[in-house]
Length: 390
Image 1 (cartoon, rainbow, N blue to C red):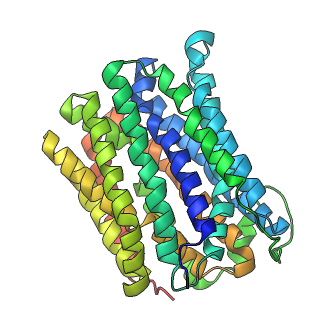
Image 2: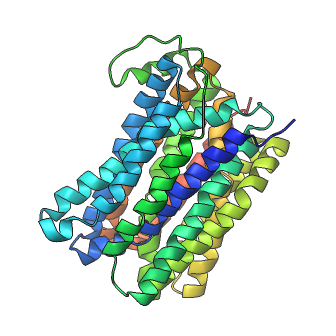
């Protein structure tokens, strides 16, 4: 049986090009925002609001996808919004109203993610069996993250020849973003069986909780608590810059993280299908606790790089595997709703996490931010140890 199908390949390439566009900007955004007058608190608020927008929309659009029995319209629209938002980030330099416009552009990008995520993941889930889901999601995450390797590399090359010239990177990112949208038109789909849940208002996807299995409820509760410990990666980049006193260190470390993530995601998926998703996931968040605990105390540049390597292994062992685990315990006709509900809860928690991280950084210092996250992750590990995978 062919495990990696044509649909999985195309969706993975779509994510790869979209991530080239996004990750050209991601390590640059905190530096760019500080350049145009954003404080750390404002950066935390921006990332939190953007994540919250993605979060509350993922559940709604996931449920709408199940109600329509269609995935591709949501995937196309979501990737288009994200591509369009990239050049918009550079506009406020000339028009004023910097904070308002940046919030709008960044939110449009995350809204695109909210529209597409659950529908895309439901398409991936449909291409897999219960025994191959971790490797399917792992393969997708691997190619997705390969784009996250190329993106920062392009940004670093640009900044090498044009130091401090962040604005043009936002315009250049529109090119791979547009390619990602065009690739989606190579896909075709048949209408799926529609959801048995009643249609409703924007937040009606919360009603899935009533019919979800106990295993789903326990897992989502644990993942939501972990999301509170997991603030935006922007803070890792700011910490890397604080330790090294060098912008390029943060970008190089982020590239290294994505290289490790991209190379490890598919092997981690194979391992999770063989050994169990729970075992691999718990090992992953244990690495997260180690990384964040390390950042609370280190003060050397070599240690920054070492922790970012471990952070790449953590991501490979958790992100795709969590979705594979959830899709295995969700109802087939409500797969997008189940994934959307989980990712909504995760993103809403990320709003709290990013806002708390920004506030704690400003009030008591960066070390406490990372120590708090490491401690809370240990609590999550203790709770998840009592959850059965099946």
